[in-house]
Image (cartoon, rainbow, N blue to C red):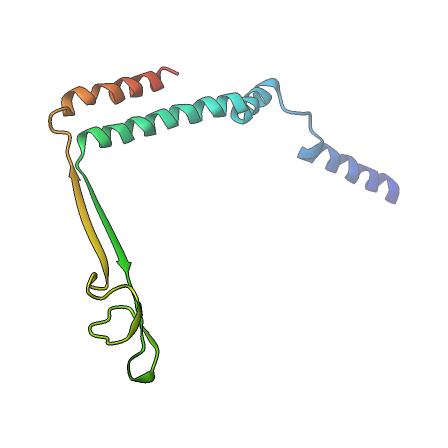
Amino acid sequence: MFTRSFLLLIAYWLISCPAVWAQQDLSFYLKAAKQNSPLFNENKNLGKATELEAERLKAFYTKVQITATGNLMMAPVFVTDNNQTRLELFPRTADTYYGYDLGASNGGQYLGLITYTNHFLTMSASWRVPNKQKLAGKSI
């Protein structure tokens, strides 16, 4: 009696367990293949890359670009005044020293540059290229 009820319990469990049901139908596998296909993923990524490049070109041709650049080159010297040797980055006065000539430099070279770029003459004509590229990317 115990073995019969035990076998019925196992049979009921096997029938109701989703792990032993029949495999998925063909549409499930086709959908999984489309989601995991390297060719579909590459094509989707190429479309996104084309759209991003078109946005970058649109910003380049229609927006203002401001660039700031700075450069500092120091000419430190070893000052040996009062029998003490020390390194000074910006020496004001020194009688005995080793390094760059104080009369030829004020302690270094300084450069600051700000660039403002605006495509005001070619704005309408230059936007045609990225616009065509964006349309070509959507047709893929």
